[in-house]
Length: 474
Image 1 (cartoon, rainbow, N blue to C red):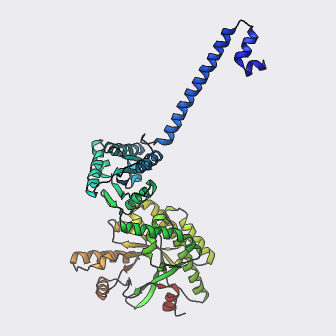
Image 2 (cartoon, rainbow, N blue to C red):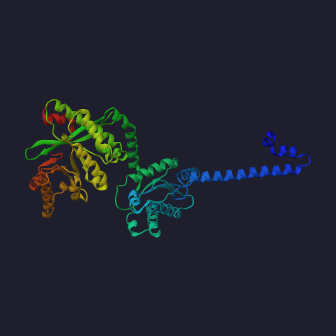
């Protein structure tokens, strides 16, 4: 029986006798057929695996791995052809998904992919990179020609029959990078993505072209990325404070905590040189916490010397809003030093509040419960300012500097600001005017009944040690 299992054809012939050659032949054909079937099934399985590996699950078209492979081949065999990498995504795709459903969201992705394919010339490739982002390798054309092609792509949504309500909320952001001969597809994709990310969030389709300035900025940000972790570990991020003044008494009444980077090779870096990048990457949340801890530590030292500290405000970046535990992290720092939260204000920006009200309300409520005073920063810079005053537990309203950048003396404008000041006074909200740089602005604020100001006219940002000496003379 063992022979029968190990060698079915020969064992079966011996077992049945010398005159059963025909049975052996049939057995051999059976084995051959089985082998053919196995090869066929394996081939189909291999094709299926290849399809899964190189086909996008949403669009049903070649995926990004497929795109990279084919695009790399095109670039190596282009025969002098010049290419542009066009990176496209939907602005606020989450809003489209949440409000119109994931089925509509998937249809939008398929529509964009199909529309681009329909406009592809021979030797061009497109694929969904991830989520709502697409890479499109096109033969290089003038910026005018690419702008025109993108307009045709925008029109594809109308032709697909999406409702007017959906169409109103479809906004595409596009970055374009013209490849050099020695560029690879990954570098091209990264640079086009960088150009796209440079675009502001505006309610219209927009395109940005990667240029020399972006190249310098990209190199700078790569340096920031390389140095940021060591900067945090070595506490290179320094606490600075800009004083707030009471124009009735002429005295410093508090301050705002700010950050500078004492970079070991670049010198003292201003916030505009690194904060925007940290905000984009999320690293700003760690810097925020380190600056806050330095402020709490300094406040503890003042209390130990018998000095009553002035209230200092701290920025609470939008990245903090992404972490539900952020309020508890601030509370734990206070507990570490045994300092009351009543010495600190937490500043929420108007823009951040408008863009994500439910999340902001949660954080503001929790911070208020911990005992922090809450300030609304950049008030007047958006379109929903007044309603924020009753939607959030606000103690302090910081009027945006744009309000006094150009004083018009238009009666209606003055009446509006006067009314806002009266409302804040009625509900025990403190108003601070930001960006005060000229005496004429001080006079205007005083005429409206304002009292507290912050700006270069009275005090530039200074180190925390300088602030302590200026205010407490210790």
